Image (cartoon, rainbow, N blue to C red; front, side, top):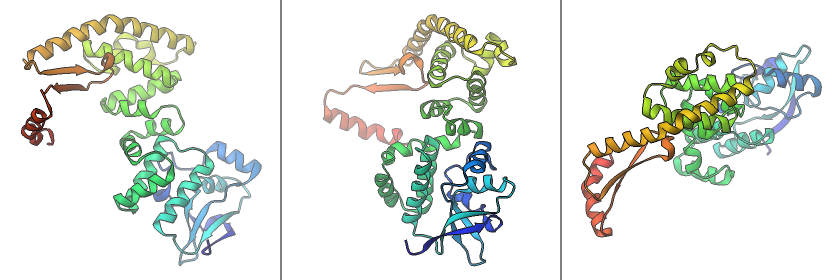
Length: 313
């Protein structure tokens, strides 16, 4: 690329504020990462930040704001070797640079994938965004678009996903509960050090229990397991195993009661014979499905024309 070169730049001439727009890590707390500071102190910056030289002679960060922030914390670190652009690259090239820079640091998380898609949509048309995504090998546009709601999670939850402490499936499921419960569950996962499998088990068991009892996750734990709310737990691995065992015991008989209540509610709708309602497996989600049975495709077409205006609302 003719418009780029590598230069040793004084740290105090680098403006990191614009880098927040391009950053795929903007959901993480600002400032230097202790582990990164330790690494740079020992080995220096092995992966040069990417900057743009502006008309005032300063340099705007495109990639590497966390590397720069870490370097600023190190006594005696006065300058950084950067890849410098004299002109802002075209949008497609810019997005390619940002993606490649991130991939050099490691695979993208669900959050960074969502951030990349959102950045693409902010700079490109939908058609061009789909082309970029197709070339990125990050998955299909539909797969990445499914991740966008994760960016609406609260900061602590997003940070947990960044650190690999919560999977995208758990994150998407937490979007189905209210904010207070969502934050409580994230706190519980973190304080107990639950891995993805144990998080999934806890959510599954609690959903079954609450589908019959009603109430919130926070209230349920406050009433049933107050010691877990108060904290100061000892022997956490053993406590976690006992908690999951108790939840399983509580949820197993509750599943029959939940099924009975579901059938009562379904019967109260007085649906015709060709209609049926089903719930998610083990009541793991609150969603229900309505099935309308038709004799043939012609009947389906006729029925769809009647209900389409309602369904599409």
